[in-house]
Structures are given as structure tokens and as C-alpha cells.
Image (cartoon, rainbow, N blue to C red):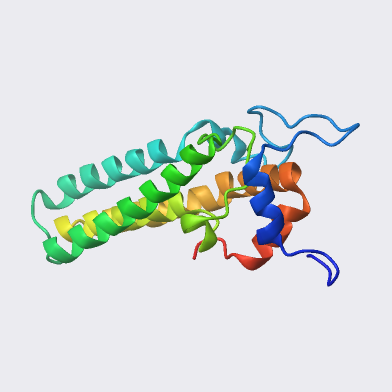
Length: 193
């Protein structure tokens, strides 16, 4: 956390978006895709190879298949097409905004890639992992629109997987790359929203 004599993280983090930081003199450069040692536990680190959108899609397909086997095309608890579509659209737009912020900053999108810049604007000013949250909200909206409650379980499972596997790895990599700047940012901005 910044002391009283130091500047706050927004001012320092803004400086990181102007130019990509190099390694400190005498330090080793950040890795370019290998997981941070030991982050996420031994049982979950193999899941880092799976990109989060693929995890979300796989869980959604499994949920729809299971729903089809159990209920066919029926919506046992009803559906809310307009509210669901609005929620899915909001989640998709949130994730797309986060994606665009990363792309415009020139930082990699893969969770296992070494971060180049600390992106702290747009949806990243409100939550540290807006793409994951947007994907889950979009899944929940589709669940409401179609009346497929197992898609809600898929959205919850997606968040649980990324929270256990991807988020710790990403946050460790950001802390390694940006040190106190990331620590100050993480102290100010919640993980989800």
C-alpha cells in the first residue's frame, strides 16, 4: 500500500500505460507463458492450458445437453426471454469492453501470457476480472432467456473454476510484473465488482 509520501496507484499505473516496463536492473525478465510457480495448487494448474472462453463454452454445452436429456425442449421453471436477453447482452457487452481495453493497450489476452501493461481503466476500474464476470453474466442471461436452469449452474461452475485456477495465476503474474502498483490497484479495486 502506498505510504503518505508516495503517490497513489492511479497516477503510477497511468505511467505504466504510457510505456511497457522492462525488468528491473539485475532481475530476470518475466516468463512468457509458463505458470507462476505453485500458483493455483497442484491439482488445478493443468487447467491453465484451457482458455476461459473454452471452459465456459464446454460447461454451457454440457448444461444444454443435460437439460435436453432431462427435460427435452421444455422449460420446467419457465423462461424470461426479454429479461434474459437483456442480461446476456449486458454481460456480453461488459466482457467485450474489457477485451477491447486489453487489445487497445496491447497486452496479451491469454491468461498464461506475461502481462505487458497494467490496465486499470474502463471496466477494470470497477473490477479486476471483468471479462470472466461478463461471460458468467451472459451465461446467466441465456439461462433465463431459454429457461435452462442448468446453464445457471454452468455459469457458477465457470466462475468457481476461474476463481480457483486462473485468477490466482493472473494476479500472481501481475504482482510479479508490476509490484506495488498492482498491490495498490488490488487494494482499491474489488476482484469482481
